[in-house]
View 1 (cartoon, rainbow, N blue to C red):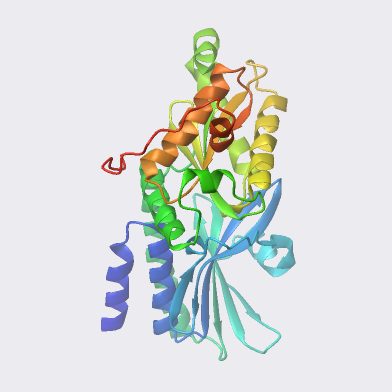
View 2: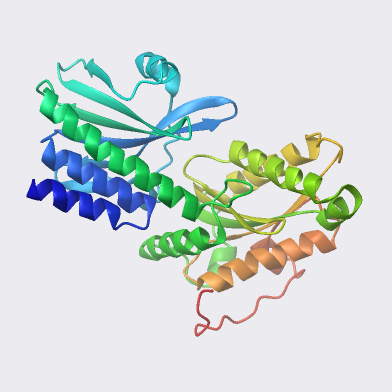
Length: 345
């Protein structure tokens, strides 16, 4: 009982989804004596559902996909697990299977607002008895309730995207991880880095002429444009990327582990998706995008670089994607000496 209370206290003091996932993995691993526990996310990409591990335990070490900058796993199609698809259709809370190794596996969909975006997998060599299942159900109830609280605090109420506060936290964490990686240190090295280098990217996205939409069609249609652009952002980026509503008609994307050529292609694809989308009543809408590589410079400098590239895009025709380093290299923009005393937001 003492161990259970300790884990419940640990779960309810977390202020971050990754830490909450780590807490539930630790609790199930210790209290159920499971060989393996994994927290998966279920996400939609281009109209198909995928399953991808988010946090898991290896030996006694808890690992998070978010901490792995080189993790390019896009996930497996959910249809690979037909029993899980059927269980979700039947709104089950627990699906028990025996894997090829003869181990007993529990699949535990986590229901929030009649939807499942998280599923926990618990693997053990022996069958689960009634007391064990009862304990697992109690732990999941606490996890589910607290996940709902975190979702409410981390997300923008209109679009459902992650909010500005969450961006500050996620970007600081990503930058801390990036600093541990070997990367070019100065602008000149970064500018001439090979396009095949795997890096992280930050993009600022702004809806063109959004004030005109609000003035001409009203704020109700303006809100609908924001929601539809948010949906296009979700479908255009991968599960390991992060999309935020920064405020007003501005969004920010953290694009993880990809090359410059791929980053440009991904941003261009999203820009084209918006341009080709038919917005009810409003018609055509376009976006401008400025992006920069995430380096060892301060967060405010990196965000400023992407913002400068965005400003250039809007001042030079809109509906285009601009990369900060290329604009500096071509003389279109001038780099400024960073002030290391500036604090992040």
